[in-house]
Image (tube, rainbow, N blue to C red; front, side, top):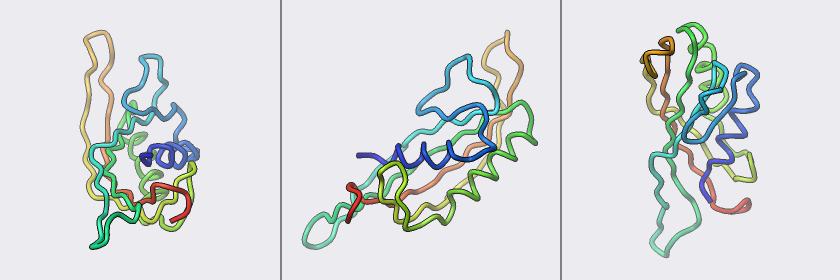
Length: 134
């Protein structure tokens, strides 16, 4: 089971995230600021005698907002809530550690009928066990 449930639960609990948290993409009706997350890669940690159930997954978390200040507020809350988090259970997932690996800013123009929005992107690596108990 991927760590999607843990990522969703942790981000959705943050009061700064007022527009919702969405896996993959947000609906057109989503209110800003909102968060979209994607699992970009996942690896199984192997030992000499086989798998121990520990996985390492990379997630890209995108914050969409009306301006850079709003995007920065939400991004900072996510960074503070996730980066360095360890030894917790969230969304039924036994999370061993979450680390921020990269962060960048950009702007997005969806189509000519919409205003430009600001987007921040953060990459996190999540180490977790496939089951709640290792």
